[in-house]
Length: 114
Length: 113
Image (cartoon, rainbow over all chains, first blue to last red; front, side, top):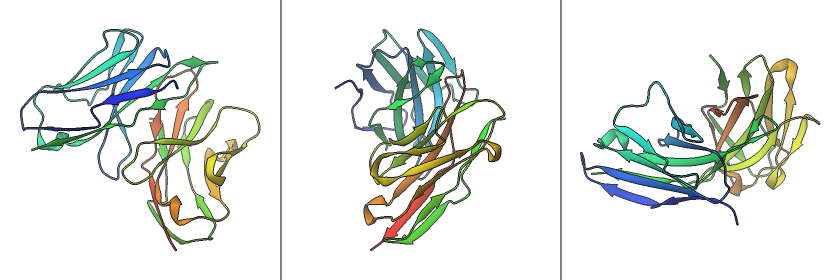
């Protein structure tokens, strides 16, 4: 089945130790998103790629970076994780269908910072 | 700025009670509308969506939502809730011809047997 896959599902890292989360998709969608979701809050968009064009949200900290080496893969790099970066990180994909962009979400990676 | 409001932050119901969760958005143009559900410890799942056509939309698990354009609303309903409906519910909007999903703050639903 076509889907959005996130690895790992659970990630533990140490304060200040760089960590990379990955997302892959078999939907062949041209748009990919990264969201941060903290407990009992709505997902917060960090950035997204429209094809190869990177779109950063204005309030996304510089500590968060992203790479999209090809259509199928997208990575979230947290250069120096702080305790406040502990959250669920969601990847989503979409494509334009009649100018409508329905997003398909992956299962998320739960990041713990010790 | 475009925004989505969910006025019910926490709803507590007994099984078999009827449910209505409010959702209002602030955007004057055409929008695509969604309700997502997140069960405890699980990822976001799409409950239902509205793009065009019949404003009464039926989704999975007996949920439905009605788009009322004049009220900028997209309320979620279920005639009889079950304990398994305990979850967080998010309303979301994509303004037409944009690629950003704007989430509401979410409503936590607790259903007691």
